[in-house]
Image (tube, rainbow, N blue to C red; front, top):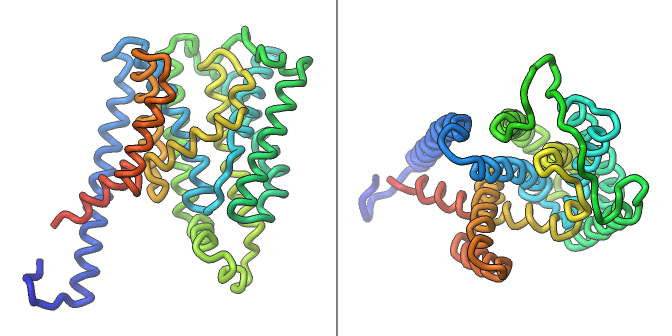
Amino acid sequence: MARAGESVSPGQAASATGTAGRRAALLVGALLVVLLVALWLLPAWVPYFYVFVATRILLMGLFAASFNLIFGYGGMLSFGHAAFFGAGAYTSALALLHFGWPLLAVVVAAMVVSALLAWVIGAFCVRLDEVYFAMLTLAFGMMVYAIIHQWRSLTNGSDGIAGFPLGSLGLGLDLQLADPAVYYRVVLVVVAVAAFVLYRIVRSPFGLLLAAIRQNGERVAFCGVDVRRHRLLAFVVAGLFAGLAGALFAPFNRVANPDMVHWTQSAQPVLMTILGGSAYFLGPFFGAAIFVLLETWITTWTEHWMLFLGVVLAVLVIFFRRGIFGTILDRFARRP
């Protein structure tokens, strides 16, 4: 470390920055391994209530991470992301109710439906930028909500779809998915694999190009890149993973209802991402944990939980400008 009055060469500065970055990466990697082991063993340590809470955190974390692909990396603020979450949930519920498919087949079908819906909506939305993009996604989200709410013959309207059986997992695995601990571990494995795939996407040349488009789309277009096509592809991938989260959430919640598609549901991944830190891949998962735990804790002692949750979230966002997870990592990286 240089003393006052001493100059620091660019090589020394780069070396210090690289060392700090490697230290932060090693810390996060070690914590992830410990966290995954602890999460796997969680049902043996805690009552089922906390297993339900942990399952919801995992699914909402995946939902928020799918949103962050287009927001944190693509610079596209969507207020209609719940449309894909709800599409996955309803596809899952309908497939289980009418066909009794294995869960893995149901999940694949839900991802395809959500991706197709994202492709249709995204084809219109990616033509616009900034607030116009946000408003158009909100409009399409409200359309999807209206269709699901009014199409009673298929969706059962405001009552939603319930009473569907939860059969086998598939692949010849004999698992009792009705057991909350078993379903939690299935969700943990699926979310971990999905998170790894998302991470590889954002670290791939496509992810780096998406980040460049967020910073200066006009300059990237001048280089011969089809900006609109890349934005649409990111939108479809985000919708696919949101549908995966919804497909697993419906069997967990034992119901698929229009609330899953409402615009207020779209606000949740926005809050979770900002709360955790959109500039960091794990930020949305961290934000989802904080959000769900705060909501669970506050609702146990007051019916006005939304007021108190809003106050707490506002304070956290004000004092943690880069998100709680991002602020912690930044402070650790700056330590000598």
